[in-house]
Image (cartoon, rainbow, N blue to C red):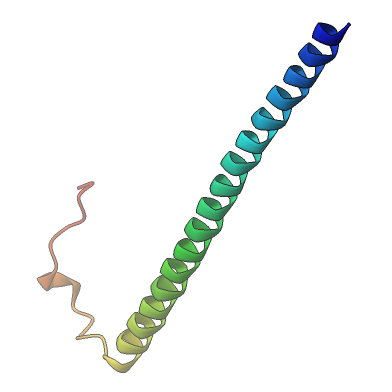
Length: 77
């Protein structure tokens, strides 16, 4: 009878150890996902800022002429 009780205790300890390991892996994965999300968010804001700057620069620079003769033909010709 004692060996059956000992076996049940061993099984429960094994389950707890497995669950602790799984929780640690999930915690690490969540931390990595949050870090990646923060990095992606920063990259997106930087890209949006660059787009705003390019728009401002394009708006400030007048288009030269309108003479299409000096331009090469489009690639489909």
